[in-house]
Image 1 (cartoon, one colour):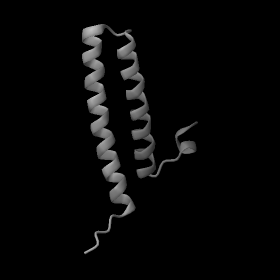
Image 2: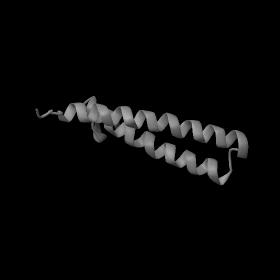
Image 3: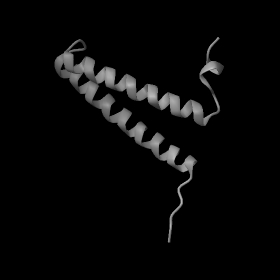
Image 4: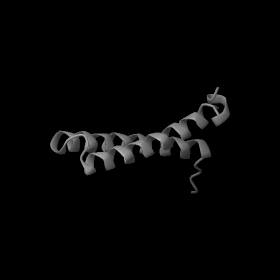
Length: 74
């Protein structure tokens, strides 16, 4: 038996994984900020990694909803 995964279902899996990664990274960043301060190297690194994950998430979900880069700009 061959299981077929559509492109849409693969995107949904990716969106769910990214969402989980975002929440995990956010928790790490918040804990680091609490322990080490907002400007510590570790907190800033987590913040940058979180930004990257959020940018990826937005790019994928915008495509899912039919938006393009030019459609969002004025």
